[in-house]
Length: 53
Image (cartoon, rainbow, N blue to C red; front, side):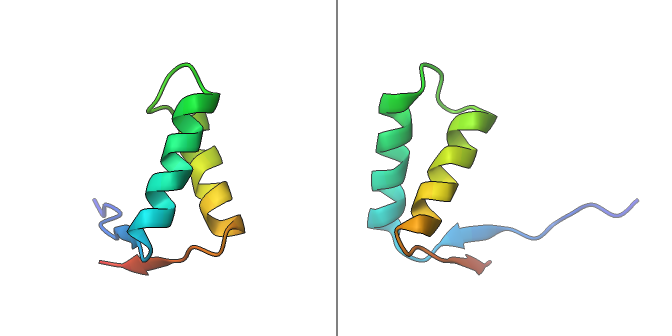
């Protein structure tokens, strides 16, 4: 079996922290799939990028 072993991390940790903080305010349950997807979308909208680890 082949597993997806690629991992990504945000290049701008401060901006990612801000996006996660906004998601925590917006959603009752964090972490959740919806909250993480929303945070990733906002992070990208604000100009954040990801790098492969």
